[in-house]
Figure 1 (cartoon, rainbow, N blue to C red):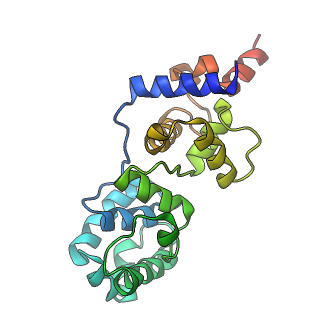
Figure 2 (cartoon, rainbow, N blue to C red; figure 1 turned 180 degrees about the vertical axis):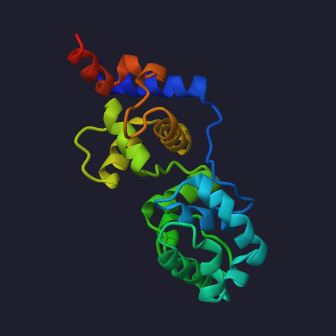
Length: 216
């Protein structure tokens, strides 16, 4: 099987079984999504969704968040991983939105990565979710799943994986493909003891083929 055929199978599978895949983070605006994605680094979406309502109630927009006191905001996110850094990032992010972007969330990757707490992955999430731009966010799930299946080959970094994925996935599917792979990694192709018996990608998965050959 060629790599192109493998991609075609995977895309067709997800188009059939997860046509409306989307982020599990809860948000009502680009600002809320940006806050949630910053908080989600090395933290579960479930925990973030428990935490954000109180933040959005007290700080409903970037202007309000930009004036937040460190201790006040920290108290609201202390159950999140790395709360100290994320508190500083959120306040700094909000201040830059107010001072440089008139209180709005920019929808260009180059603008977003200037914000405290926002790297390329976060910028790709924001632009693909809000604006359906053909940007591929590569987190730990996407990195693991794409390598296991064989969509990426010898990709040593998230950026290398991103470049390989977008070179094979048609642009109209890229904004969805992140969600396909991350949800597959979250619920089926988990880090330990992947649930291969429940996976519809077995016919093209290099990891499964390797495991199957060991048992034959």
